[in-house]
Figure 1 (cartoon, rainbow, N blue to C red):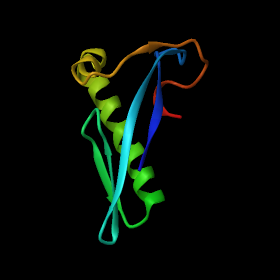
Figure 2: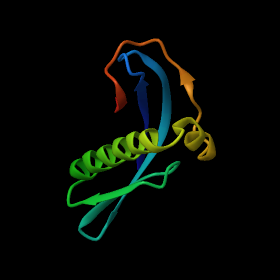
Figure 3: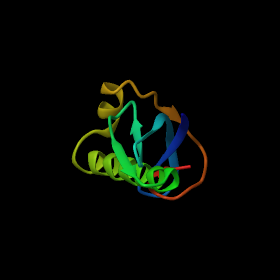
Length: 98
């Protein structure tokens, strides 16, 4: 089970400059749900699927924003084979999972 998640990045002015697509894979282990972003290797687990999905989204947003803060996030995405698609949508600053 899983889903494709669209993530939008905005520049410092709050103008979206690109989007990326990430794959979230989910499965249940005993009494817990486990989720993994297959491109980035980020993972989360919780007692319910909904909790795990929230935890995984939060973890990926934190990871991407931290990479952007300390390094070239576009290099990081390219290294992980994540395609960057230029965007013209108006949204808020930082990475946000739609």
